Amino acid sequence: MKNNRLGVVLIVSSLLMITLVVWLMLQRQADAHAAQIRAQGLGVTRSLSALPMSTLAPGAGRAGVLNSLFALQDNPDFAYAAVVAPGGAALAEVARAGATVAVSALPTGTPSLFGERTIDGAAGSRSVREFYGPVLEEGVLKGFVRVAYFAPERMLTGRDLPFFGVLALAMFLLVPLAWLLIRRELAPLGAIGAQLGQLIAATQEPEGRGGVIGVPRDARDLAEHLQQFLLSANARINALERDSVKALADGRLLEYGSNKMHAVLHCMPDGVLILDPSGEITFANSKIEPLLGAAIDAVLSSNIDQWCRDAPLRTLLARYRSDSMEAGRQAGVEFSPVAVPHKRLVATAQPLVGADGAIAFGTLVVLRDATREHLAQQAGNDFVAHVSHELKSPLNVIVMYAEMLQDAAPDDLAMRVEAINVIQDEVERMAALVNNLLNVSKLETGSMSPERHRIKLDDLLRDAFNHALPRAESRNMTLDLQVPRELAAVSIDKDLFRIALNNLMTNAIKYNRDGGTVSLIAEEGDNDIVVTVRDSGIGIPHEDQAHIFEKFYRARDGEAQSRGGHGLGLYLACQIVELHHGRITLDSEPGRGSAFSIHLKKMAPLTAGINSL
Ligand code: ADP
Image (cartoon, rainbow, N blue to C red):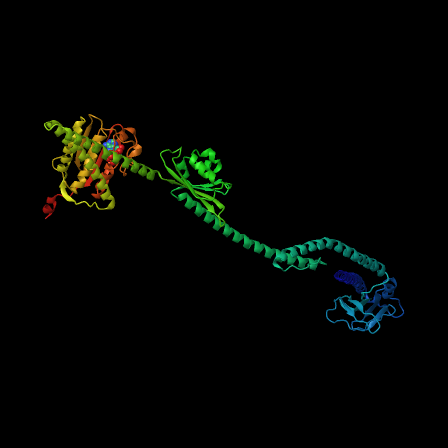
């Protein structure tokens, strides 16, 4: 229907077009005709007005120049020519049949005026275009020449009909041609429109607004389709943009969460491995490297057997493959890594189970450095064995000498004296050990509170020196005392400090070589007093020095171990010095000897207050 309407519109507009073209051509023709008449009229008027009056109007009975003009003029537009007196009275005239010389006064004014005017025809006759000019003789106005032509009319003549007919026909034939072309051009648009319709239907369907969208019938339909499509596409793009922004925000949130989780896992003091449900390692934190001696890259990219040389750990990880029966249970192993043998690690595997109890998220394996605990435990075990031994040996000696005393002859005085001395020595050794143990226990329960007094250190140092002398001499050692006579006073608990000092002196002799030297040195600085016990003994290995003041810690080199001991002497000495707000330092070179220094704050001299008064 719409196509037909377009056809009618095309026909009507083509008719209008034809009419307009014809009108314009007629108009153009009339204008050209008027111009031609004007040129002719002006020319004739000028020619006639140049002639003398006698030639123009020679008098009655004589053929004037006007008649000759009329006879010569073969112009159907010629209406009339007349010569009039200045007053307007006709002197001579000639007119075409059907035309009369208009009785109309000429415009007055300057006599040399040439002019033209249109004079409407009376009823039934045509209007004319009149041209006039003055006839002058020696400057005197003798009359006027008037020449008139029929005014051109816009009329379709028989001559014009073929031309306009051919023109109209050509234009009329062009209309269906244009119509066909338009239809042909519109056909692909129709197809595009149909596809647009399908697209619109497809994009609207998810929102439940889908409807049947037909094939477009004309360009307006197509434009509507296109607009509809653009709207729905725009809405879809907006929705997608919203989704994308939301997805981006969600992604960032997830990334943040994951980064946070990784940062937490990396900062943990323990080593962490995360296994996926199939048992593959998907995460390893940075502590794995120092604990296991394996690079993180290797742990993450290669097979467990390739990077892990520790059989207990391999067995533990193998348990957490998804096909293993034990995969869902927690388990742990303790081992010393092959790559870092001095360490002791505890690996605990905890399945990350889902609601149904199956391994849903893999397994978390935590590797804890239990070296210290292990050493402490080992030292504790050694200690119990050692203390038992230390108590048992003197007891055996005591029992042995007691029996000898019993069996000895009453007059064997030398033997009795020796037995009593030995028994006394052994009791002292036992008492020393028990005392150390008691002191440690007191320290740890917090019941050891120092009773500090103002003490002159030199006496105390000399006592400790004398106490150690017999033992040193028994091993041919040189004991050296370098203590100034007048030392500043310090505030200490004499008995506790003596324990610390004796422990250092005992060690200096015990871990020394026969014939070596032990020096007890005191130096006074501006603010403190430094007491140093230096020996020329076996020294302490560098790796043990950092732990040497720990409870039960003993250097692990064979020579130190062979000397016997229980790892309490230095611990006690350090604790006692710290109770006095002092500090103890070690300077030792393996094989060359050690120096333990106690730093104590000096007390102000008693006279200082008096002097300041
Ligand atoms: P013990 O001597 O009973 O083992 P200590 O606490 O007194 O316990 O000493 C701890 C460890 O420190 C000793 O086992 C020894 O290895 C080391 N040590 C202490 N003093 C010295 C020293 N003067 N020279 C070398 N090693 C020492």
